[in-house]
Image (tube, rainbow, N blue to C red; front, side, top):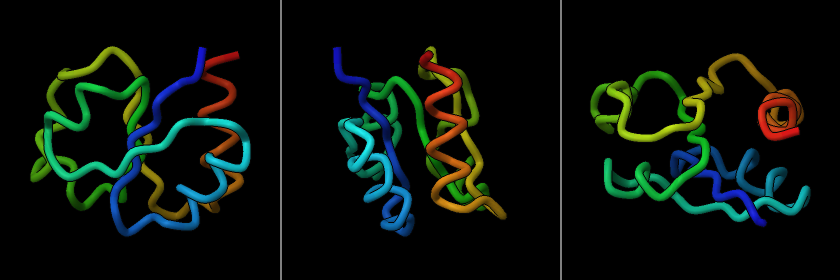
Length: 81
C-alpha cells in the first residue's frame, strides 16, 4: 500500500525526494489536504495557519525546518517501517 505524504508547497526538494523513494505525494494547501495524508511535512512556520497542529490526522507532522531532504525522507521511512 502506498503511503500518502502531504508536503507544504514550498518544499519541492523534499517532495521530489519522497517521490523518488516511492511515496505518493500531495501538496498541502489546507486542513482537508492534511486529512488525506499518512504524514505531513511542513516548514514549521505554517503549522497553525494550515490547521494541522491539531490532531486532524493519525500520522506524524514532521517539521522540515533545518533538515535536508534526505533527513526528512529518513524520518518518514522510520515511521512507516
